[in-house]
Amino acid sequence: MKPSLTLALSLLLATSLPLHAQDSTRISPLHISIVTPLGTNGMQSWNTTNIISVNLFAGYSGGLKGIEFGGFANALKGDMNGIQVAGFCNNTLGRANGLEIAGFWNFNKGKINGLQLSGFANAALDTVNGFQGAGFVNYANGSTNGQASGFANICTRDLSGIQASGFFNYARKLRGVQISVFNVADTVERGIPIGFLSFVRNGYKVIQIGGNETLFGEISFKTGVRKFYNILSVGATVKDEQVKWGFGYGIGTLVPLGKRLDMSLEAECYEINEDVWFTDDLDILNRLNVALSYNLTRSLGVYAGASWNVHIIEDDWHEGDHYDCNSEVSMYPGFTAGVRVGF
View 1 (cartoon, rainbow, N blue to C red):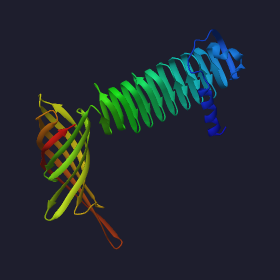
View 2 (view 1 turned 90 degrees about the vertical axis):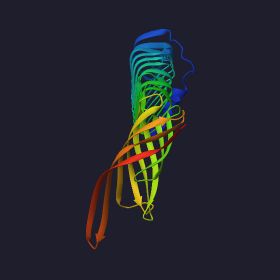
View 3 (view 1 turned 135 degrees about the horizontal axis):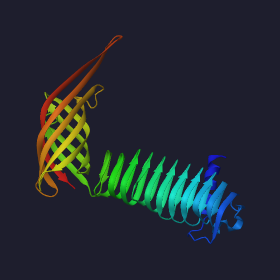
View 4 (view 1 turned 90 degrees about the horizontal axis):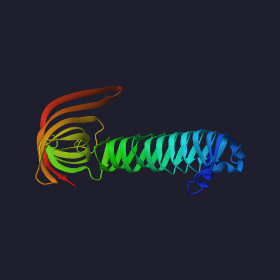
């Protein structure tokens, strides 16, 4: 079957279901069908709750209290209590208590207590008291245990647990851990986002203006939470009529020492360019900074501290068919100082 036809049949099955889940009135210990209503429950299928259900292609039933297998798709008008397995998709309009496994997607309109596992996507329009695992994306109105996917997780309400994905996480209120390349949250309570860049609307956001022994003028943007934040920096200096500039990335943490006093621990890596816009040679400056910051007001503070630098330079050159590479590593102490503006 062509992928486009497969997707169209699945969408037709899902969208043709009633908008509101209703309790079924019949109980069937065993149900076997090819595609509803070609099965043992016949025209009563959508008013029947099954104990064991086997749909060779696709089935639509009133509910489940046991286990259901579908070669292509399973759909329930009411609640799912047990285990639901489908080659392509599971669609439930009522509550789900148990385990859902699908090759492509799981869709639920009601609350979920249990697990959703799929090869591509999970979508829950209500809260998930359990865990969602998908090859590509998870969506939930609320999740208490967590989400894991290959690309993105989205939780439009509170999430308590873990969000882990290959690219992007979003949670309105986080009580746990986010792990991804990009993390976004409205508020983080008793938790921490870990990634390349994390943005928390009510979190730690600082513009830092200062300098150090290598780059006399520098501006940095710090984002995340106080326990773990990302740093984006750019700086420059003029020496012997030559301009040296660099841009860097780093991570850091703030340790509170008092009501107005904090200590920051930061590790940064800079690409240094000397008298050119961008150098073709390797010129890397690694810095470990330890600084004390004093908060003059809620949004304004000053900082000063020490650093340890490891500067790595590789100079490649060619002469005819001969190629050589000279490497130079230097280590030296330094300083950092400036002002911080929070917003």
